Length: 253
Length: 258
View 1 (cartoon, rainbow over the protein chains, first blue to last red):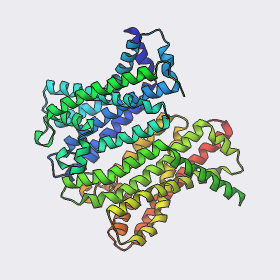
View 2: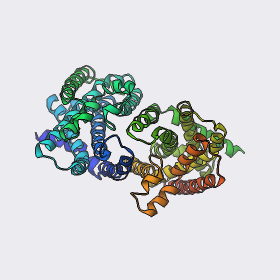
View 3: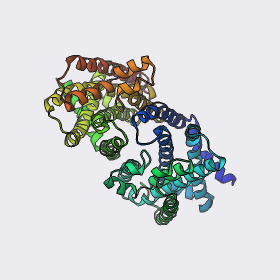
View 4: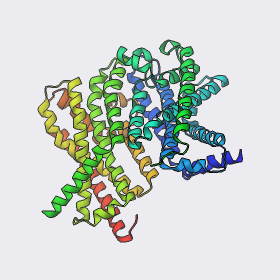
């Protein structure tokens, strides 16, 4: 376990000295919720107190960004030759992958610490169980998204540039065509069918259901649980399969 | 005359680099097109206010802003990768180099936002095409001003990438949130103190978004005082950016590093 912790700290250290990205993410979150969220919720009349809905949406977006960052970095490290170096270290494959997964989870926890606390305070009146269930769902969603980015890794081995372009473009589309920023019932029919394929639709509606939002504006939580389970299992399975084929003895850039 | 040719060649090179960066084009286009064709449309269904007509012109300004701010990333890359050393060895003055980057930033932003404008004209038809054409030079000056802000951030951050991207992110969010890009000033007045309302009204992004909404899309005749305000709000940023980047390059020439 000491090796795993040492490995996590080795990669986290540069990001925490100084923690520029964390402070920046927190500042942006506070400005968006405190100014944009408050003002835009005066214009939104379709749902009650849009700021609460929006704050949860921002938390989902941070989760998505961090998870895709973890998945993308893994692929980029493989492509740039850093992963073959890590594979040559006297540490088992399982420990190495556990360390990478735990590092992603630690980064996500650090990024979410303040935004999630503020969001829970804005919503208020929550039980300990719903808070814990919300945190677990966010990590579960993050796990699935990281797997999705790993699943797309085969493109990186054709062209790293193309991979970055597809993944970054896809990220924006996945967020916009989902219920992260608006409830499903307000989506026009042609957009709603696209949103039904976005994992964030199910992740965000499940988190909102747990936090006590009106179920009338959310998707059925049973579907959300099924989709998230299928996403995590399929994308991570695909990722592991591709990594085994591509990373072991991989050609680097 | 020969220096002018070198400046234009440098500007053209930087201009084409912007459009050749695939991931950047993917991010910008997916972001702005989805804002225009998805977010604006869905928000309108959640409001009693005609948000689509309000927000579509604003997306053009957001595109102009994002493309201008990328000038800072290219300057930071040139400093980090040592390209600047090569550029300083060219037969061009340091001021000429600064002008080339600002010209490229302004032109790239104008061309990029022009493509968004073309799409906006399809989804939100207007009869005031001439007003739109009259606004273009003013938008170019604004883009140069925004490129100036980006150049200042790149000069301050020097080769520390994490600082540059963090500064850029915070400035982007602050300038957009404290503007009338997302919401009308009548709504903001109820929530923010009066000094911030003055800042929001004077924000060049607010001025540009209002100019597009009123003159290009609503078809109201252009008020010269509004265009003058846009110029007065943009030019200082260009000057500050030019001075900051020039000072950074002079320091680089003397010390060999930043």
